[in-house]
Amino acid sequence: MLHFNNIKELLNLLARTKDLLAEMFEKRKSFSYKYDLALEFVEEDVIETLVNKGVLRQNNGFLEIDDQYLVFFEQVLEVNEDINTSYIHENIGQVKQYINFYLQENVEHRKYGYLKTVKSSLRKIGRITLRNIIDLNRNIENAFKSEPNYKIKIARLESFDQKRRDIQQLIEHTEKLITGGEEQTFFKSALDDELKHISSHLRLQLTEARHNLIETQKQVIEYLNQVKFQSRLVEKIKQVKYLKDQFELKAKTNFVELLKGTNAVAFESKPSYPLRLSLEHLQTDEARNSLERTALKFKQGRRNALPVAEGISDAYLQTETEEEIFINLQAMRNGFSASGKDLYQFVMEYNYPREVPFDEKLTVFCQMVSMYELEFKVSDEYGKEEMIEYAMVYPGRKNNDN
Image 1 (spheres, helix red, strand yellow):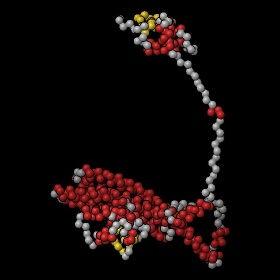
Image 2 (tube, helix red, strand yellow; image 1 turned 120 degrees about the vertical axis):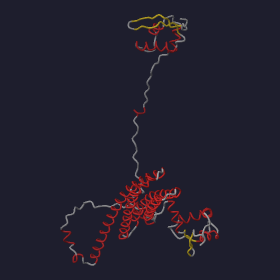
Image 3 (cartoon, rainbow, N blue to C red; image 1 turned 180 degrees about the vertical axis):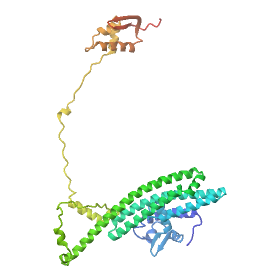
Image 4 (cartoon, helix red, strand yellow; image 1 turned 90 degrees about the horizontal axis):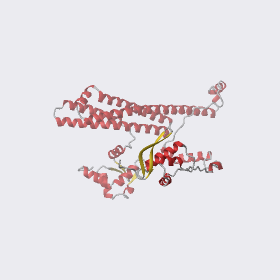
């Protein structure tokens, strides 16, 4: 097998064959990829180069992506369904090893190299832990919904529950690692802001992972209880059916005595365990046929007539108008200029278009003085009427000589 001389050669080859690799990666689980289909994307010599460089593997007339590149693509794109707890364990061991190297090293640039490796491993631990929990939950759900064999389903669920416990132990080991004795000496002596940030972020990720594992444990227990209940029920039904077919049910069992001693309520509700179908199963022809039969049974194709709303009452459609008469201050100003009276007397005696109370007349007086002060002459004299004292205002410009 040939090897790449440098990273540029690898990237150039992957870029030239990106369409082919994308197509093969998308169909990596559906079927084996034929050699003739690959010729539609690249030339034959390019395919030979991919095989010789170890990117692809050829098996007779079929091609597949090599395992190391397939794992790389799945990890980067976060679509890997394998739960790899050993990788986290290896990173924990690597962190401990390089922490010891850091504490024993006296050369500064070598200590920095060990510190850099420790920070990289800590980042991987948090990211991989959360990713494994996501993959674990998806695998648990798929095993419960898709596996037809009850024994295999129980075995798979118990295996996933063991992986959950393994992840839980790794979380505890990681927390001891970043808060332990000798390691705590390292975190205090390595005065690095990035390391502090990585450690704090890792604690948050471990807390989130612990909470997610609690929900995972509840889900596994619920699924196992449902499967075991259904499995026991099915086995009992099969056994009873076999004895009935052999006409040995009364002879080999106390079936009749049990029925006589049972006082079950006829309409008592039976325990039900709802089953949510997975997306993979819904995409199959079998699921489609089941849905069509169910839809036909419930006659979901017939639409119910929508109720018609009552007519709107005429009372809501009648409009009512409200009129309000305003006082025209502009017309009052024009009339005041030709009246020969002072403003207060003019306002009080003015012929308004509606009945105006005394308080509103005082407001009109103040408004006209404020609006037309440059057109009126305000004297130094004051008039008085009952409890009201007012300035004497006449037509003409204001006297500014005083």
